[in-house]
Image (cartoon, rainbow, N blue to C red):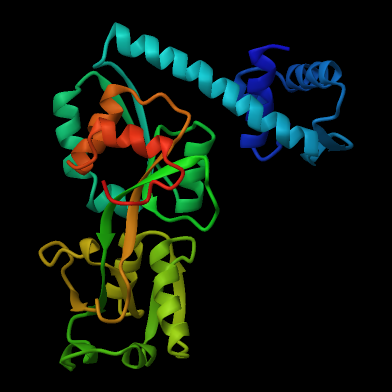
Length: 313
């Protein structure tokens, strides 16, 4: 058994059980990947993969257990490297942040600017996805941290550090009839075509939950994962939208008007997500502190050791 075999197993899973893609990602041949997995199975005495001809259909039960252990071993190896890297140079390295489009576009820019000024030799990478994808990337070690609202899947291996409360507004084209109302209601909104955030985002869930609670059926004509795309459709006259207040800029978003809607929709909490088993490099904890000054390194370390770290620092 060797680390290469463990990497091959985890990469097969990361590539949705596609051997060809796994081999391409690993810069090796498909037969070579297959052979190493066979050798690992022979040594363990169990099948790790369910095979259907030349295709991998699923992981076996032992395969799922082996995957968890393999990820843990590879993470520990990365942690050892991080310890050495911190000791050798605390201001150089890579930081991969998984986040949503809205967070990257509307919240992270000033923080990234400050971070780059302080750590010019740290290579910063942003990986965009929905909350479920983000926490999966952090869980698999493909990202050092996640910044997003709560996912729909359970992630006990991750600690969540509360960061930001996202309130919502309703965006409408200029001269829209809703602008004449002093206080809008969900019933008012249901009279117009709506363009919503996808349900894989907390914002999309919160909006639909509010309508469901009052047994009102909204006229949703389109859903999307990108706030800027939604705003473009609203500006074109295709409908109205409920988006985070941070997504609207009166100077930039010409042709749109914002209507306050905090009384209609509960805010969504945004978190920093960290794997409990990862070694946190100094510049990673500093990025978190730049996001929220209350999250000092001792408090972050405590959160990583605490089963439920969703309380405020």
